[in-house]
Amino acid sequence: MLRLSVVLFSLVGASLFVTGCLYLSTEKFMPYHSDAVQMQWQDLDANFQGLLIGLIRGLGAGALVSSASILYMARAAITTSPRPYRILLPAVAIGYTVLLGYATFTVFDRTPANPPLLLTGVLVAMSLAASIVLTISQPVRDD
Image (cartoon, rainbow, N blue to C red; front, side, top):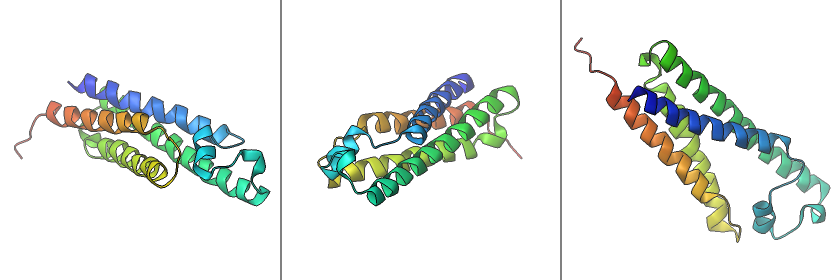
């Protein structure tokens, strides 16, 4: 059961790593961002472009740091002991993906854009599933 949890957490971490790298390396916004503001990148004022690219890179930085944390803790849970990570690993995975989901839903709800809600929902579901499996795979201590 622990291995299944680690595999699920690793998939979440790898997905966030790819997202982080993509958002940190982009020079303009994604097509759904264009739909959200109803403008093309080249039509935006340079100051607005700077603000948006800064926000996008901030999201990328958060995804990259979260992915590094998740992947490190998932590996450590297998190679050492899962005990120290029973709370922190689910907190980081669920915490970041739920907040990412909230941000994605906000774009979906308030703009005509079609952001990646399904992908974000899958990451939240995998984080929850991995957390549940991690919890039930650990023996209860009678201290």
